[in-house]
Image 1 (cartoon, helix red, strand yellow):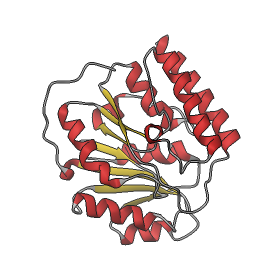
Image 2 (spheres, one colour; image 1 turned 90 degrees about the horizontal axis):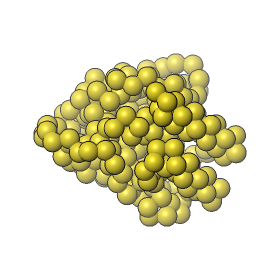
Image 3 (cartoon, helix red, strand yellow; image 1 turned 30 degrees about the vertical axis):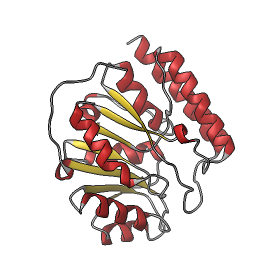
Length: 234
């Protein structure tokens, strides 16, 4: 992937914002926030952009998260708002359904301190058995498409768990909604940022999924193609 930066910033969890879009995840959001609190010793800030009709925002506030409420407009709109609201040097994205291992946060931060601009969790490395088979197949296909467009091997384009230097977030105009998770990897790679994919475990989600695998998968594939071509001819 891109050439590794050489500076050593020495960031700690006091420099980390964990952000997520939340939508009707009252079954899981408390667990996710508890895990973040435990792993970071309550030092990371948490920002949730929420459009829920259940107790999700109430639970998030009780756990100390900053909650920005908005009308439901889709995954990308919520996550983009959360990313831009973060005010610390390192921004970590995750989902609110308890599928991602917060225990990996120290390793993600260590790679940022090594000089990487983006650290991306690769769910497919370990097989992602908790993921529905159709979703797993689609994610392998998305990775192949992105790899062809970028001219380098990409393993998991749509993971929700990544860490970024905040300047990466600020310097790129993010355009996608359903396909934002893929865009958040494709554009930094295309622009030569130092990116590292790290194997992570992926757990079965709590609560019901909000994304139709066929309709959502088509939207993600379209986003990867659109963004990849835009970056190639930029």
